Image (cartoon, rainbow, N blue to C red; front, side):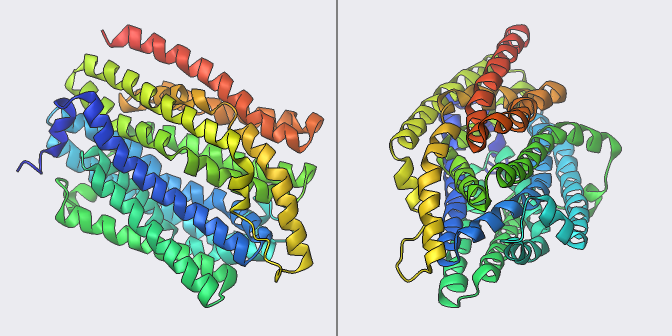
Length: 458
């Protein structure tokens, strides 16, 4: 019984202890998942070539967006679920969970079918040119076969965390990541399957994650999968969707941003600049894993205590989360500024057995990317306010301000800057857009977060 009511500790334990309990497993899970992406990119770059990194980079927007369907429904629905658990309404929590399953399956399945039918159009639209289009199509086609499993995993992972069981959420990210790294080595290096090997390794990782999530909800969850709860209910769908749209809009904006970046970099630079961004985008997720972990840990704590009416605890969770994530962000910033060349060199090979063109491409990547990496991470120490501020509004169920603040960096500032600055400064204009957008977004988010806290959390 104690395990069944594990979610109640979100309203009783100290905020610092809860944040560590929630954030550490989330951070470890994100770390392993990020390591998976890093190692995947390293294997592809070293064993296939830098153009293979470009190929994966242009495929990511569509797989990222469909996976984000599950993430969005998971985070948005879990906000409703956390507040239902906090107020003691277990029946609503079960119904929310059932509706999350159905929404995720139907929406991701439909998008997967569309994505496979129009695969050639999407690959070109995402920025692939003739130098790596065939590689991109190989990877895209196989990964899309398993994308529904990824969406279900992203949804389920957030529900697990909302139940107050972050260790299982961590396992759900660790197991497929480890599996993918192992299968990458076997299929690419041992069996020499090239791009197909990288794609099938990713597919297998989705299957591993899905199997674990299904096992959890059958045997370990206080929520249950029953047919009656799977039927969509208009009121619940509206409530879930209004909050899910916040995350989905943010993730969709990231996908649009990636597509825009790929096309801009091809127009003002070349395919190697796309590869540089591929490395940088992996580092954005990998290096910031503890900051993102604190943010994910903050969501169920703030949502539960807001639902229970413990407003002082909500204030404390905001302040503690910003303090912890800000300190971590400063540490990450320092490492990036000191060791950019060492970081980039991990992704490329100088093996003399490689052909002359690949060696030349690798040398050019090592020449271009370190400076770009520094610029992209230049405003990292202040991003905690952006993340926690937008997540607070989502945690308490205020969809509109959560949506607007979530879109502030990528949508309102970064995309316009990338459309304008490269026309004057070329590829460098792309990289300097990132810190400018971070500063502007932090100022806006900080203002509205402070105003809302003073008004509502008395």
